[in-house]
Image 1 (cartoon, helix red, strand yellow):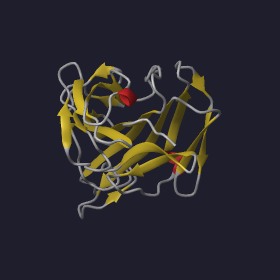
Image 2 (cartoon, helix red, strand yellow; image 1 turned 180 degrees about the vertical axis):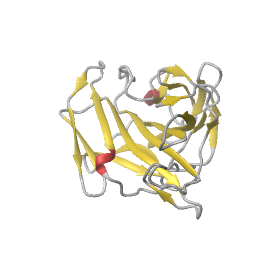
Image 3 (cartoon, helix red, strand yellow; image 1 turned 90 degrees about the vertical axis):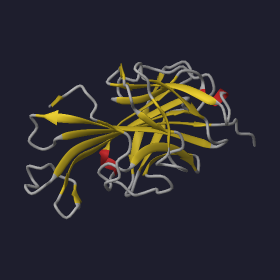
Image 4 (tube, one colour; image 1 turned 60 degrees about the horizontal axis):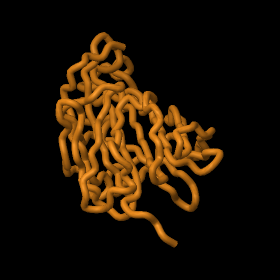
Length: 239
């Protein structure tokens, strides 16, 4: 599959589960749960769509992690407490019919489709202060903090760099509070992929980006969609 280099679209498009939903992880009841949703929505999804998961300690050393595939979502189970956690979801090919319905198949199987794309979703979670970031080559779209986000504090700016296939991505719109305000753009990346995003919350912060690239020579899709999130706590938790 050949993907043209220019980014035709950067930002959020609302067109059903094919594109509108994002991906992130949360600690719930002592577990690392994979969340598939949009804003406050937390929807069920097919756990087999999780295509990869990676965990690291504070020094950037990999920790073994397994994916528990439950009936309506997935749970990540690292061998020990991670400082960094990443996950990828392959959402497959989607085609839109003339009546604006989305079908989870390529256009070769939906001959009357008006729009077809393949979406991938990624998440990077920083769980411990001063954690060393590993290589993020598994994430085709990544939001990379330029300092420890857990040390910034609510109301202060966090400098990030957005990478697509390891290269700086220009003009990518960043959502600073994907759960609370999923349509509000907080910043746009410069020519080197850098931007500053204000840390919004004392609790979980979810910074998100989404972009689309045209695809040529593929019988099933005409566009590639990428979503990525960066999550961290805005303030240190005390019992």
